[in-house]
Image (cartoon, rainbow, N blue to C red; front, side, top):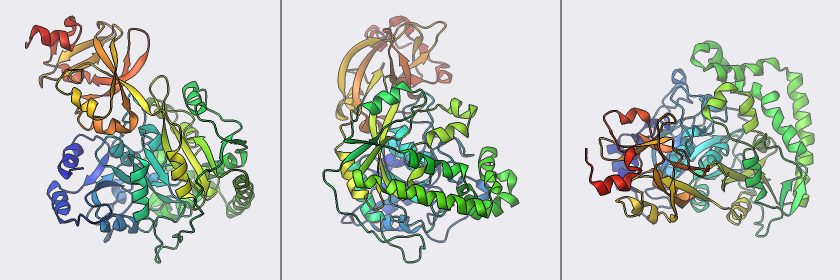
Length: 532
């Protein structure tokens, strides 16, 4: 990836980046890199609770910001291998949340649009990878922050064994459970990054030497006897496409996960953030403060009782690995829009963490990969779990999953077959499904820039000609990289009643634009040669 392409993308990524290095600095770094290095010239983003020398660390809280003297150990390993830090990405404040909506620096949306949350807390890192700005990014994962955003954006998320990637130079969320995670466009790149980033750090008391388990090339994969999809038939159907070798009881795992936010581990967050919270209560977002302050209600006796119960649950969980090598779960049981999260920010956050929160408490590794789409175009995802240090086996198993990862996109303008930008679709492996028409609730405009824009207008719209193309989901980031505001992804209703993902235009951009709805589509407008 050319560094100039990265620089161009940074300007249009609303709510994704908190700070970035100047363009000239990035270009200079790119020129200096030894091409023989294992990650030579690959740009990446870093979640803004991980130190990068030369940029402030905010943890999503401006008043908490400081300038570190050196980069976090894991960042330095990647830089030494030739990778280029582009900047710091947005996050749920103090990495407390799974929604991506708890930041004073803006709220990024899933690359699949339609109001879907980006997932958190590593929201910016996931979107920066999914929209094609960078091929990989670092996040953190305490309760699922390296997996939920991967699920909402159709990319790979690696939650390594605790301590495999050093947390030296990472703002603690829950120090005994925190992991540095990796987002990537594919498993191959994720593996390359992991091989560089992993390593024992003598100065890090939480670092662990790699006690890699023997690679299991034909793992026994277990699936739960029972799952709750919270009424989401689309996600249930998506997971049902996958069949494991054995069914297992995950009750002990779910009970362990409940301890994270409903038990005294919330108090561990106060061990590092309590003084700041007390001194600067107005600097912390109300929802973040509300979560953190629940930790004040636990006693030392509560903490020991929870530790004892966790030990029992871990013993029960460890017996799983006598029957299976890998456990497969949906990453999330359902999805939410930003509006839905606003209605119940804490309750729906717990729903998102149902199948993620137990992993670090039970010392498991995890790999998240896309699992196609629901019928209404929302991303689905699978996470594979294994015991500590089974990371390589999980990545191998993830490669073998029978995943249908193609999505249907409606195009109405320059990406139509025969039009100037159709080649972008063809280069990404897209195939034409055929022509279609929208429901009669849209208007088509020629914007002042000459680009067509499809706008929903339920009161005075018409049916517009479109084409349906099928595109590998993993290539979506490459497609989005060429799309600029006011265009973005959303749901497009078709004349036959179906809904697909498509490019819609923000209504504000139609001021001064030419309404070409009467022609029925972009091609008809072009045939008439109407320029005004």
